Image (cartoon, rainbow, N blue to C red; front, side, top):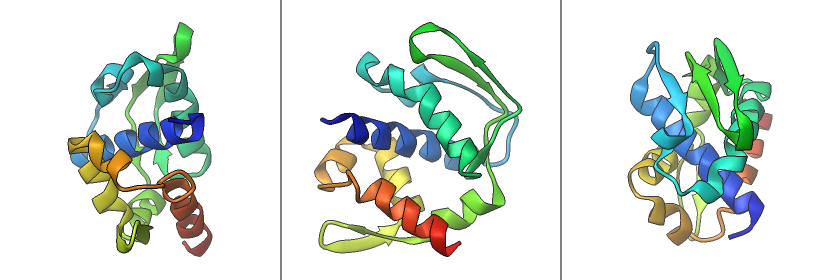
Length: 132
């Protein structure tokens, strides 16, 4: 798996958790993503990217060594919630961004089995951001 694919999986897992949690006073650390340690170096960068793209909002990011961080109050923004309803091409079919991240949250193999989400998932996010 390439680094962009690892980043996409981390992003999908983060978004899936935030959708599951709704607008709650949650705390997020890497271990809650239920991913192997090889994905840890991407965690903080993905959080910061999602926040810079106004998909999520956080109250505080406390960084630790190795890519881990403690994220206080992460939630989807209104833009992030709208993005979850955008159509995304996955393989031969289409789904919504929200359905893809929820399915990936429960079944990581969906991400790798959905085929070519590299460029597909983040590309779909970029297209959705441009139209939002």
